[in-house]
Length: 306
Image (cartoon, rainbow, N blue to C red):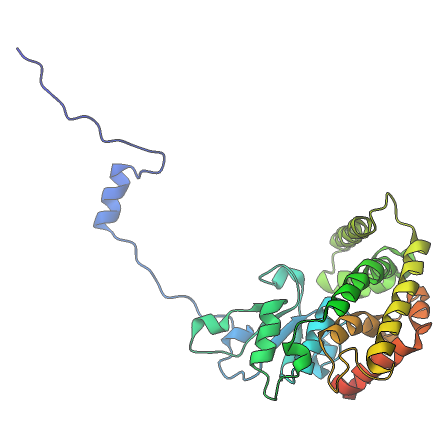
């Protein structure tokens, strides 16, 4: 009697759905429900909001009156929007709330086009948004690329000034109360979590300093000496482009490089912060041209806070 023939089993794979489950979903298809409304406290849920919101490191009180951020990266972009004359509000936030993992970011006003409601991270996207949405004629100082000479000085700023700033705020134990007040205590009231967070941000700052200086250990004196030299070089550049009494852009409006410099000088000389170790502020005051530049930036773009 000949053997009965059977059809070969269907090929399977790790990604194939078992037949019983597949048959179940054929009989009972999945239902897709509409998205839940956003919480009422979410700015995106406010369909009447007319101004974009810049999420930055700041306090509730400072956000209400539009004070400059105490974080250099946030202050840079806050200033760029001011130069572009783009109306906006600010709100306190943290890196954990940012879609990119870092502040700042801009949340545009509600729009019927969903893609227009996406947060805009710092960088070229935010600069292009500021230029294209400026209600006034966009200053050429923002629309144009940085001149090669300013590009070189920007590298100097990051190489000489940023490490000293990181040490002054994050690593120097004398300024620990300020670090806690700005970046640690607002995040949590739990003492254990605060200690852990403080250790994390301090370790991250130390790692960045070592990577930037390419040194085996952190030499605080060398960092501040580099900062003094960096401030002096920037003052020389300012004297050459604006006679020491204008903007780095050389025009009537500040430019992107002015915002880069003000991002640090604005924070370093902010008396409200309560710096305990003031070596970095003293180093900056040794370059009076930069001090006057900071004052011009405050009067021009933050006049009510000057």
